[in-house]
Length: 230
Length: 230
DNA sequence: CGGGATATTGACTCTTATCAATGCCCGTGG
DNA sequence: CCACGGGCATTGATAAGAGTCAATATCCCG
Image 1 (cartoon, rainbow over the protein chains, first blue to last red):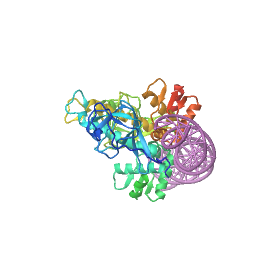
Image 2 (tube, each protein chain N blue to C red; image 1 turned 135 degrees about the vertical axis):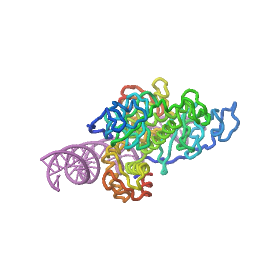
Image 3 (cartoon, each protein chain N blue to C red; image 1 turned 180 degrees about the horizontal axis):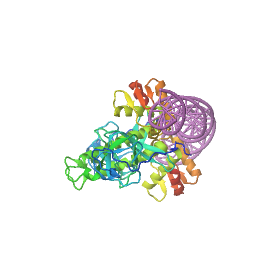
Image 4 (cartoon, chains in turn red, orange, yellow, cyan; image 1 turned 90 degrees about the vertical axis):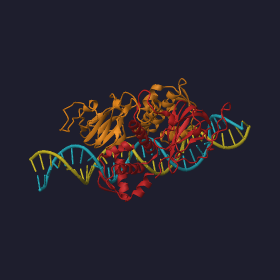
């Protein structure tokens, strides 16, 4: 069932309170990343920079070292969405909360930039409109969600997730009318059309959906479906 | 070698010149999507809305129907990055050219929005700064690139692509110093650490790289490496 | 020099791809 | 109205790629 690798152990010395160690200037701040602005902070190897679910309000720029940005599934499967090298910025979020976690891969210096300062109150030059920003950030969120699916979910989970996604976006009660052929679904989910077909059959056998026809799916058991999609 | 499905045939009735058919108002425009602004245009099933490599200068909003946004590899493997339903916006690009193609899945109406209008010359409310915009769009581009890798590339191709990515981002001649362990690489590439290790061994056996140690990779044959990464 | 984390390698399993046959659905034309 | 045909989908048999489990091997770092 769980095809892909799960993280066996994670006995990292989780330094949840990284310590500034640029000894010349830094006071012994606690949680400096969240408060200080634009002052590079050091993180030890494997130290957490921020975690999924924490309030977001800054972005971070790697000054030296390497950072991994990742997401972990309930059962421990992990998908790293990016490695950030010096100069890279990470931690940008669409909403109020971090949707990813970030850790230093090796001892790294990271500068923090308060988001408020990055929104130009009045424009200098042309900056994107609020709507355009929403579009870009929304696309980013969806794409990142899809990364986890493609990197770490098995065929059944992918198809279940797809059904959920389509159901949530085309609300007609719990009957979905798929506009696309199996081939397209396969190319979206990184599978073959035969596998997609088989997984639909399996969801049907499990009593989770009913297939009036190939394009017409009825969700019978949303709870199980959500559980399967992981 | 080529694990994933390639598109067997694509005998779509490529309507490269979709025709506006809202008969009340529309003149018989040619290539209306690129010129008209904000006037919904109809696309037939499987009609091309834009193609990879074409100049980009607008974004598109689905009014009715469904659109697939995708990328095709040289050998025909295709990764759909998104299905766009009514209300969704697509076609936003970081640079001058479209990096994806878009087609109507079923007969669809699409509104075109010139990008110029979406950059607020003077700000109403706060809009993101140019830098922040660059960060968001850059992250988006990288994430989308990664989608193709995770959805459609096999293990050897993924590792080869990873080596290329790291080489291009950490320029020290052609010797790379990987800061992360195999486990992290695996979780980035959607593989297991054993498979990553084996693929490095294979690249070595092929004479494409040299492994001074696990963390120290030397690219011997960039051409082959690029060819393998697909 | 020793020890723990990290990496490699091997044997085997399992999921998913591949190849191929058949079935279904729907529009079209006799 | 029914038969035909073509695209699409399902199902089966088999193969291949990647995962799993397990046994070393190597590399740091103290």
